[in-house]
Image (cartoon, rainbow, N blue to C red; front, side, top):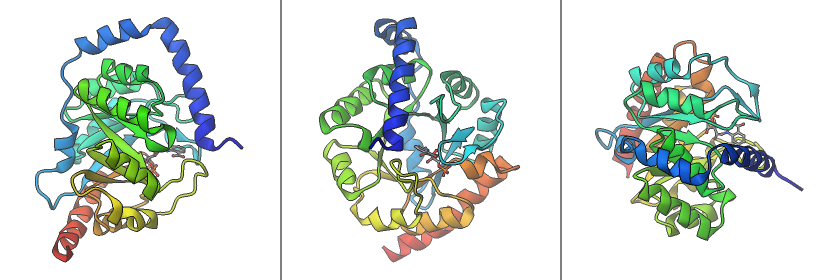
Length: 274
Ligand SMILES: O=C(O)c1ccccc1NCC(=O)[C@H](O)[C@H](O)COP(=O)(O)O
């Protein structure tokens, strides 16, 4: 039976084929090469000191699990308010059918902020990586569950060749091992199972010991408040990706600041213990 992830990917492929008709790969490559160099997302996520916990702050209008989340007339304004709160990276969902995102959102955010921007999408074709760069992304998402080993390695290499970084997303120990094998430098654990949509915040802590010591570790999803960021930091997360809680917060700048503070306090305790 097809999983939620399978269904999303089917739509992503259809939409991409339409865009490819309008802008063939060679033209997209040309546009990508005309962009300013990508910003260093790896450095941004490493933070100013080992004690910081960086917040990847997401522009997310809608989701398969929750439906409509927030009316976001200006993704650029929202991203600017995240940046003012100290966000390290802005994540922009560009998938249209389920998340109501777009490449126009990505370009608008890139124009406005001075920090790295993640194109958060379901990358299943090299074309999307060139496209991400052409629209100004500094970082792309590679979901291990959606890619075989050869493709994962090829996409990661292409991402690096284009001067970008990849957030390599895992959900199981086996996927973490696959991420390590291809040399991922930024490894996320999504506590949302993309096949069933079940969310279990404890999952990050269960998998943390398997994460590579030489990569930046990211806890993704499931944050409702600062206490969740603190719990991820206490389990070893160096960065936390937050969507829903930020788009629904009436005070996004303050929320990002609160999340960073809560994360830093817990990270200091984690570093003392380890
Ligand atoms: O958010 C969903 O319902 C979803 C469903 C299927 C595939 C991906 C999905 N979300 C993408 C993400 O990973 C999240 O947007 C991101 O980690 C932030 O999550 P949250 O803070 O829980 O909104």
